Figure (cartoon, rainbow, N blue to C red):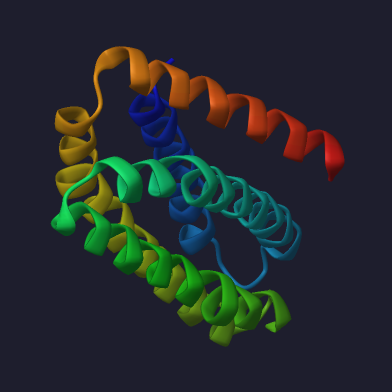
Length: 151
């Protein structure tokens, strides 16, 4: 599987979980807790494979616009990983505050996904040939597998 296909599958999985999370009510404590755990794991794995495989390749082989885009994407990851997600994890899953924070997480990630899929991924398909995208996809799959084993 090529890198873009793998990342798009991750995006779909996370969007699906975020939709389910934001549709839950305050009484769905167990469901919210389980979904949040899965979302946190997916985001963590996805961020690592992008930042360790795709972004460095784009910085090395891409043009100025692609390099700039990787820095912006990394900052969006940081906003989710360091600010929004930790706050959500500390929030009582049975509260209205949780609902609000979950919605903010969903909106941030949807924006990030939209930018990657509409801007960054098409640039990647122009920058890298099919063989290189396959190689990166394999690197990402291997890294993901080893990270899952380690956790």
